[in-house]
Each structure stands twice: as structure tokens, then as C-alpha cells.
Amino acid sequence: MTRAIADVFARLKTEGKKAFMPFSTSGDPDLEMTIRLVPELEGAGSSIVELGIPFSDPVADGPTIQRSSERALRHGYHLSDHLEAVRKIRRQSAIPIVLFSYYNPIYQYGLEELAQDARSAGCDGILVTDMTPEESGEYCACFESNEIDTIFLAAPTSSADRITRITRCSRGFVYVVSRAGVTGAQDQLSTDLLPIIGRVRANTKLPVAVGFGISRPEQVKAVWEIADGAVVGSAIVAQMEKHANSSDLPQRAREFCSWLTGGSNG
Image 1 (cartoon, one colour):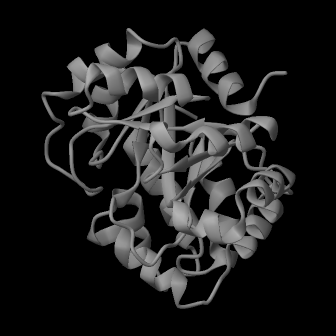
Image 2: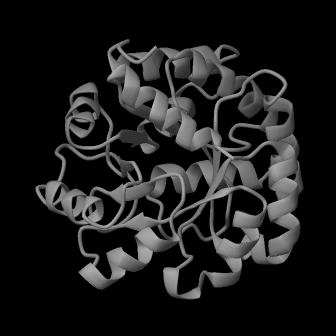
């Protein structure tokens, strides 16, 4: 049975295109805005949307996304509320949605319960930043049985053995972080990026997406030249923070994403 994420990458490949994958923190500034936002991101030519589940200790995230998590947490939303938001998004949009989380909220919810509820809501993938391949057996089995892709991170510092483990556990695509450290916009892409992509490709036929630090059109284009997809998070979240009080926030986010892609991915 084919899956939405694999279908998207296969279609883009036949069209000679690459994936644009925006990230937004679910519930920032509130869930109603998140529900309105995702169709606008799709309209901007996005291929897959990552929705971050707010967490009180987001150790892999830089200050911009940390602040967005803090704003979302003030509402007192539960993980079930974010899944309900996905369910409502599905009434307007069929774009693949990847949940971006830490393991603590999942553990509190219940692994099997989340896998079932996420599938029912319409989620297509999940990326848990602090889930290691060595400890992922039950985690992967639960989501695999519910046809949700488990996506893992590979870094420039990942050893050959670790890359092998990462690619064996990954479904949908492999997420390569452009540098060691936390999320956040940067001026230049790391020179370590091409070697790590090569090492990942040597271990898997899965698509490779690159994230962390991509914030300008020329960086998106540079990533597209060497990988199958570009993930943009902090730059989009920063724009949403800047225009948080605007009623047309989703449209502003759409315009920003169209600027990032040069209008070439719609």
C-alpha cells in the first residue's frame, strides 16, 4: 500500500521538482490559526508540512522555535487537541503532515494510542528528535503497524554505523540536519552537508531532505541542487512571530514561503 509521503516524492521526481517542507509550531499563535495556516502553505507550493508539538524543554530547537512553543503552551493545549486540529485540516487539505515532537509528550499519551489516533486524525509521518535508532524498536513497530512513517535525523557528525542504523529505521525520507546544534537561521550552509548526504544515499534509496538553518531563497535552491527536499522552520516561525497580531497571518506566511521558493514549486 502506497503512502502519501512516498507518493509526493515520486511525483516530484517525475516532474523534475524538489520538495519544499515548511515547519510551524502547532498552536502558535493558536490552533485556529494553525488550521487556517496549513492550506495556505499548501497553496504556496509546499509538498509536506511539519507541525511541531509544543514541548516545555525543546532541547533541539533554537530560541525562535522555543518561543513559539512557549506561546502555544500558554493555551494549555493537550496532544489530543493538536490531533483534532489535524483532523480539521484534513477537511481542507490533503497535504502530507509530519508531526515533529519529543518523546515525553508521546510517552505521556501512550505510544500505541498515539499511533492509532494520529493515523485516524490524518497524520502521515512522525519525527521525534530525541528518539534514537537503538531504542526505537517498539516505537517504529507501533507506527509502522498504523502506516505512519517514522523519520529520523542524520547529522554531519553521524558515524557510518549510526547512519546505517538511522536509514534502517527510517520510512518516508531521511532528514539530514545541515549542522550540529539547534535549529535557527544561518548565513551559510555547512560545507559538511554534501558529504553527509552522500553517506546517507549510500545506505538507502529513500529521499533525503535537509533542514536547520535554511532561511533564504538561495539556500533553498542550493539544497534542492543536492537533496530531494528543503525544510524551513525558524525563518517561517520568525515571520509568524513578527505578524502574530495580523488577521491575515496565514496569507503572510504563504507569501513568505512563495518568496523562499521563488514561486517555482507551485
